[in-house]
Image (cartoon, rainbow, N blue to C red):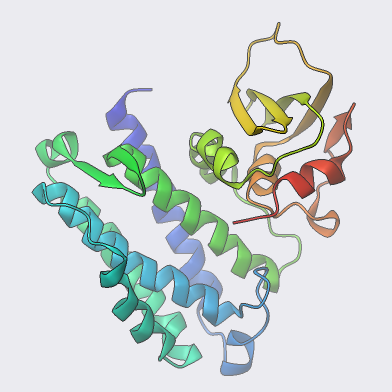
Length: 262
């Protein structure tokens, strides 16, 4: 996939996730806004506030990458968090939708030349625009699910969004994966879309790489792509595990403990 189509696909995924967020929180009353989300200790409004404040921060990063300026440090984020934490729940819901729409509008305003030249050193990574949008897509898609599933326990991540988040999953697995006393290799096969990964667990940590059919492994995990995304992001508990997850040679609970969530 070429970079322009990657950027286009990520923008489409973010726009679809934004539409879902807006539709999910529209019309919620004050009591519903304070219902627990999937995130432990966070209400629906808390998650919306996090998405809103991070949209403001990411919009600043977007402009820095466009202008060739360094990314703002953590000291610039604290006033944004303080402002959003001071909002009442209903305002957090409303303003989150607006802030995320503003981020997408800022992305749309980039010219083709600005998209191609966009670079930013952020979170220890040297990012182009696709890499930057992958970070945002993972956060927005998963936290939108955290809200949606609190209102509809059958909610899943749509395949078009799961496909975009999959691209960044090896990095996320390296960040979030916990060390395991024993070395274990797991071949992962996803559906909708079909992908193949090789998952290594062990005392040195977690590694996730694209796989070929002849990769040696002692275990196999077969599941929908959206469920694999949720597993790596710590959101595949027994109550939210689809029936078509199939695992051999490893306990699913071990994999859940390996990815406690981010």
